[in-house]
Length: 114
Image 1 (cartoon, helix red, strand yellow):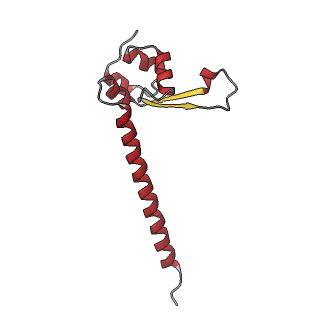
Image 2 (cartoon, helix red, strand yellow):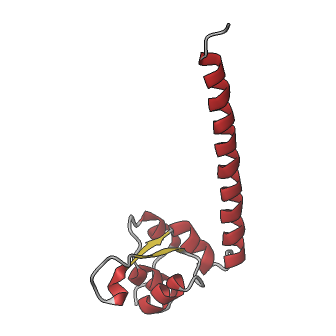
Image 3 (tube, one colour):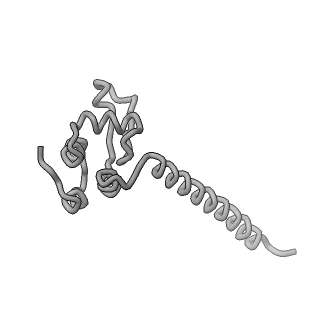
């Protein structure tokens, strides 16, 4: 198995399960199954049920270099990822509320004054 450095991982444009497995010292199958089951927080496993293929080929994987590196160094776990995603969702919701408020204010300003 090839072993990648952190800098090499950062330089790869598309990290595959094979590359992630070699970097972590596990099989590519362990990477894909771990991502599918939500126990390997290094990216996203997306199931496309519309594909007319074998079950294993109906999955796509997006592995994030910094998450992979942090996981390899023991600096990330699923709870941290969930908290980050929860906080991002809250921020997005607040921005959406602000956007709606701003659109309402702008629509009032656009109406002719009587």
